[in-house]
Image 1 (tube, one colour):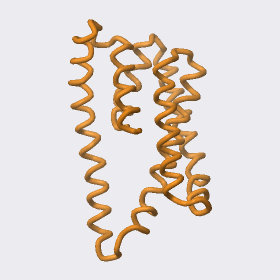
Image 2: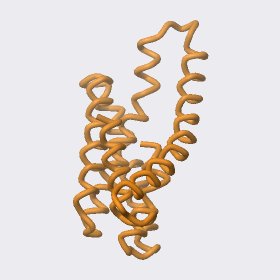
Image 3: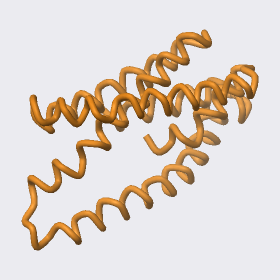
Image 4: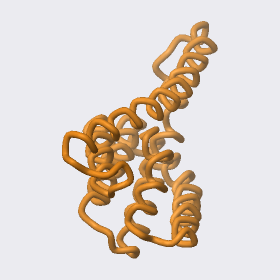
Amino acid sequence: MSLYWIDFNLYLTSLGLPTSFVGVVAAVGSAAAALAAFPASVASDRVGRRIVLVAGLAISVVATLGLVFTSAPAVILLLAAGIAVGNQAFSVVTIPFLTEHSRRRNRGELFAVQYATSTVTSVGAALVGAVVAAIAAAAFGLRAGDPGVFRILLVIMAAFGA
């Protein structure tokens, strides 16, 4: 999902949507994520952390795939909110899940590795995403900023999420 944060705004712009709408999408996504944090935590206590992790990931994957098939602003808003909710559910439950499935003496290292991996993945995704976008554009005869290139990246993100 690290590709999402970098390429999603570019995708919206490639669809011809105004920058003001891109800002609204970001705000709606942030608000949806904030609203999802506590319910995700409560749900993880009631039904289990693994279920919430999988559900959050499933919501993100489905919403990401949905973006491939629409350019309707209202649907994009809904799907962006879905991605934010799914990501938030996953994020909120990750540390408690790791805590419950690790030994106390290893937690410092475990959390350090988890955060470092997340950071490295974000940087790596930015680099790999740019290369994949260029290769996809050349392979399918698309311009670099064509929405089709970003749709290919969305499918790749959903595949990795799944």
